[in-house]
Length: 339
Image 1: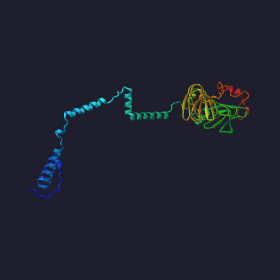
Image 2: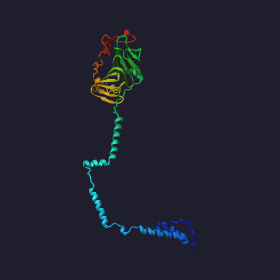
Image 3: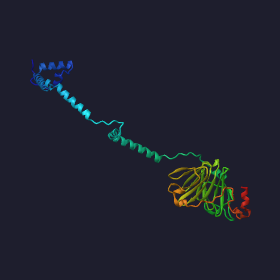
Image 4: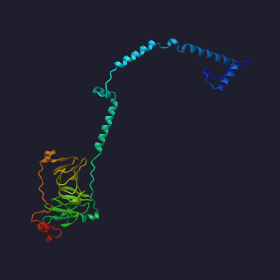
């Protein structure tokens, strides 16, 4: 007998009516409905509601498309397909149409290619491997030997001190700034077969890997043992591959004349291998120019140089001087013959 006047039990009527409950859950609801009049009435109300919804909103036979409706729809689709203009990909207009359709992808691809090109163009530099010559400080005086040819009373100055005049021959030290006297010539030999000839009033230093020419002129005659020797100037560097060349340091530029072989030129922004005989200028702004690139430079007269470094560097009336003992000096031509 149903005795409960009201019920607070929460039942899932929809799951019950849709047959979505498990058997134990359904049996439990059935027992409750037998004992609870309120829940039984609510269940009947839900059941009537679902029946009305099903009868009113379920598709009816009249709602289904007829054969005529299907034919009309298919006809419209067929007409639209034939009216659509199609450009084959093998035609120019077809390719352009496809590019326009994919323009954002094309633009992105072009942008990536440009970025890669700019990266490698500005980051990569020619890699030229030349074995470097390194000399320890202790061995420098024995490695770089010199002979000075100058008028009487003129000597090779060290560190800009005219009172510190060196003997007419000896060895050069690393890190010391040397000044060739006026009207003097300095011959430097290293590795026995490689020779450098510094002009009058040239200023230079020797380092572990080469020579720094601060001012003046330098003639180099290098053999195989001079490969990798570096001449450093204010405008750039010249690396020898065992060859013959001339260097002149001027304000704002360095002139390089190649007479034999090839050399490597480097500035702060460029690297170039010079293989053709002639003149090239290393500029202070990092540019590398030939004489034809600049009319002012093209008008620079050629420097008169000896055919060989074995030519007498001074006139016969000048002497090969020892600043410490002028009485020991002898005619330059006589001493130079022994060199």
